[in-house]
Length: 253
Image 1 (tube, rainbow, N blue to C red):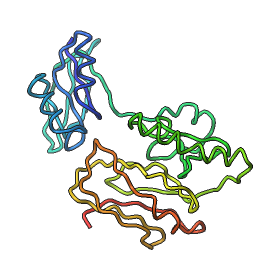
Image 2: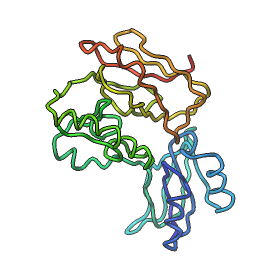
Image 3: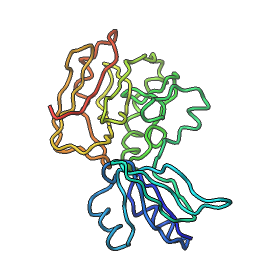
Image 4: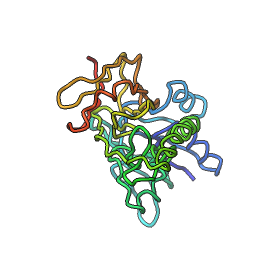
């Protein structure tokens, strides 16, 4: 079998899985301007493993009658090409493990598609908390463990009869994709915020605002699509609980 794969994470992992099944990987493709992995891994996939990695391209058509014979792809500059193959693997466009949260009627964040939570990891339903892969599609086990340890205090407070705060919605602007937590409670503890971006930027500025008022500015060394960005929570006490949504942006200045 000759397969084509569309990566959104490390290009070597889906390719290795497909090759282990006996397939020949003819190409990997992403609509991003660069692969969502390190340059070293991308070069390894292309040079050592012989797998072309096409960036800035999308699948526009599946070709063949009765069975697949290839895919037509369109590049960002308008060029088109046909990749002969008999198998297509769509992989890496991950979503959180949100099935139980969705069926339970919890409010989902439009960015992560996981449950909307505040800095204490409370969901929209009193007494229900969420951590780890339920919240975000791709993060490390260490991140999930930190969130699990962090949520314990809020769980104990809830069991002791603490009220469930509403919180202020938190949203992001392009090129940011999502942020977790995605609601703000001014009195919450200092769990850092995790963000993901679709663009590579050098020394970008993270800015947090509410109703035109700047709450926090944070300069980063670099922003890359395949790495999480960490936003300090030192500004949350400045949030007006009666004000509008809090907005986080990423830019050159």
